[in-house]
Length: 86
Image 1 (cartoon, one colour):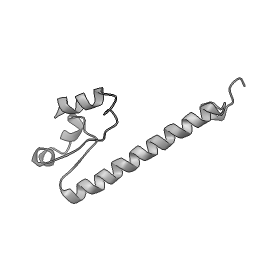
Image 2: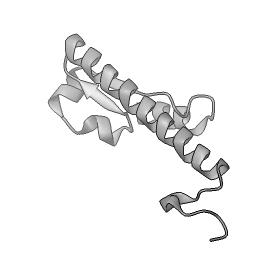
Image 3: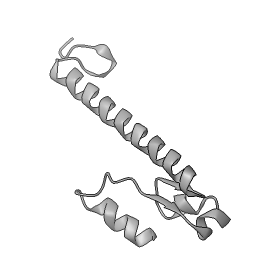
Image 4: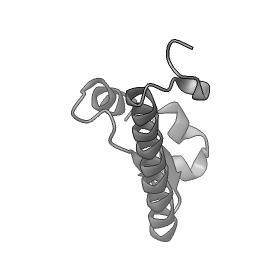
């Protein structure tokens, strides 16, 4: 699992894919999902849906932050709200 996730992360086409894991090994060891490099884990289908919703919301927030950051730079305003050259 760890190698598979590493391959996903190494490929720019799939690097941003969220990986959600589950099953007996992840239920027995609650930190195993971190050890294999997944983005989250869930003990059952209902929890998996909730965790997937959380991961999607997190991704959207990250993309909005990146877009906002890019706009600030293109507007001539650096991080911290200072204009370039000031």
